[in-house]
Length: 246
Image (cartoon, rainbow, N blue to C red):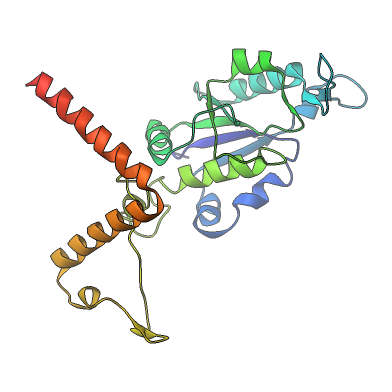
């Protein structure tokens, strides 16, 4: 096994793998291009009811995940792994997860330990001492972290060699170059009186590449203009750094 290993801490260890059994990621799992291990915090409790949550100090609604079962679980995972993979927690308190983050993590190869939060939250002492990195998928709330973690693993696994049918597929995705992807067309050439752009039928790959790049910029300007601002800023920063090196 040379692919990344993901150890998922979840209260639904029997159900979580179902979220990753479809499409290219599901096929990659069957081919053992990555490892998936699920751990239930309830297995690291001592009481009869296998308690993993309690009421928050200070009052208020909801329950909070206990630190001790999570700590025991992480230590067991560490003992089962032969590396120092980061503990990652998907939470609104983290920075927005971006494709560049996923690619950077995928390049280190080892994988990650992923915590699926539940209830009102997780005891902050566990987060402070045992979580290495937090990320947020967006400004919305989920009932639990399983869906978020599944999205995270899916995005990561797509970058693993041999997972996608074409080696260039991942590099041409949205966000990879700081832009959204260009529009795509397939058969028939005319659908409901709308024809495929002539340039895509020309066979001129230089013109096709140029058209796709311009369309990507246009789509980004229309739907996510802030990405263009970031692209310009990053380009300017690189130019300044290069000038200083010179």
